[in-house]
Length: 335
Image (cartoon, rainbow, N blue to C red; front, side):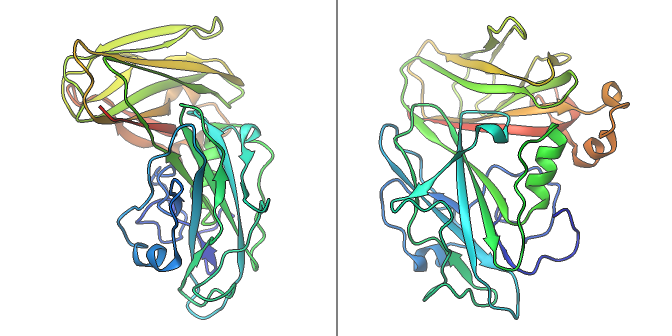
């Protein structure tokens, strides 16, 4: 789509402040319009009432089927629209490699069901669109998931790429398309003294990339030991740190970056260990590509510069870096 012209059809938001225009905020994993709702019933009036907040998405139940509702809005002030929606799931990854997306279906086997207004499939100007029959996320394993929703208005042709050749292409497509949104699904976990979880990481680019792992904590256990490691012989590493503040931001490696081979995917394991039972806390693991002189000769360097942001890497030292936010996973520890 990649147009700066006002979008005048049915759109889905990346975040609450998303008005349907292309943006460079980087917030493409927190859509309030992708609504995980466990097995509870969500009705149109509640979806409409909470459109401007609060976020009504629920944590995902491990080992049980979860319902995924979708909400959208007709941005036109004059035209009545119709629209359908697709949803895809990808397991625990910092890179949304489209070749790994798995289609979701409703209870009746529909992959592209219609969105409805308050009464029927006619979406009146400025009104909310809603998926009455949710997509089903089959009993998920203990890992993290991301849901991708793609709205198909009747007046707009939506093209889904077969693959992305670089991180910049992926993020540009997510940010510039008002009909595309993503949401990280939060899994509640209740470990004792040690939290261990793995997720995919990698490099879509055709050249080696300088990557950073940024962990942002809320109410974390001070003094707990943090380890991030890959045992893949093609890209081995082990980084350690101590959580010094409840709301700490820690980036690993704490100096330089991790060089990741081109066209590469593997697993990174996170471990948080405490002397005491872990409390209730939350953290995001963000994945960033450094944008600087090392990629100045890249044909997409101008695009990387356009998409990159100045990112706080360490809340203690104030370290920052110009980087592209490639992906993120979120965990909630129910201590």
